[in-house]
Length: 109
Length: 129
Image 1 (cartoon, each protein chain N blue to C red):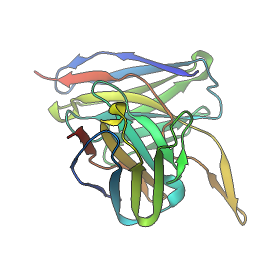
Image 2 (cartoon, rainbow over the protein chains, first blue to last red):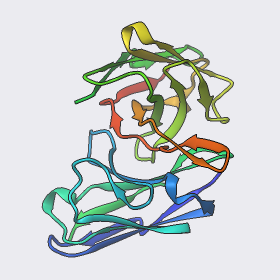
Image 3 (cartoon, chains in turn yellow, blue):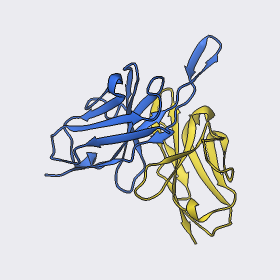
Image 4 (cartoon, helix red, strand yellow):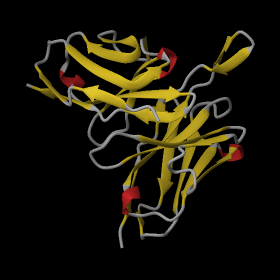
C-alpha cells in the first residue's frame, strides 16, 4: 500500500500570505491519479485538484498543484479567510487501494 | 447539480452489521463510479470500496472480508454493508462519486479519473456496547 505523508502537520499563516503544502508518497505515483481536497469542520472533503495540477470545477485560480513521482505540492497563492481548513492529498495506484494522507491543518496565525 | 443523499443506522453494537444507502439525484448515475469512504474522528479518510453502475466492485483489501457494496440503478442508489463491526469501525462514513472517462496507451485503456468530485454529507456511525 502506498503511504502518503503530508507536511507540515500544521501551518500557521496570515490572510494574504502564500501557503505551500507538501505530499510525499512512499513509492512513485502516477500524476494522473494524485488529488487534493479541502475539508472544513463538519463537512465532507471538497475536491480542489485532480491529476496533480488540474483545478476542479469552481475552484479559484489561487489554488494550484504541481509535482511528480513521489513529491507533490499544493500552493495557495494568496490566502483568503475561507481557505483556513484541513487539506488532504489522495492517490490511486494500480496495485494499491486509494489512499489519503493524514492531512495538513492550515490555521490563522 | 448532483446531490448524494445518504442514510442508515448511526449506533451499532459490536458484531452487528453496518448498513448505509446513498441516493444520487440531479445528475447521471450511469457511467460514474460510486465509493464509500470513512473517516475516524481526527484522522484522514480511508477508502472502503467502489462500485460501477454495472455492478463491478473493488474493495480495500484491509476491509474486503467484511464489506459488500451493491447497486440499484432503478433507484439511482448504492449501498454499503459491513459485517462484524467493532469500536474501530466508529467513523463518519461518506458516499462519493468518481467521474467517468478513459485514456489509452497503446492497445491498453484505463480509467482517466481516480478522484472524488462529489460527496454525501456523511453519516456518523458509532459502535458501542
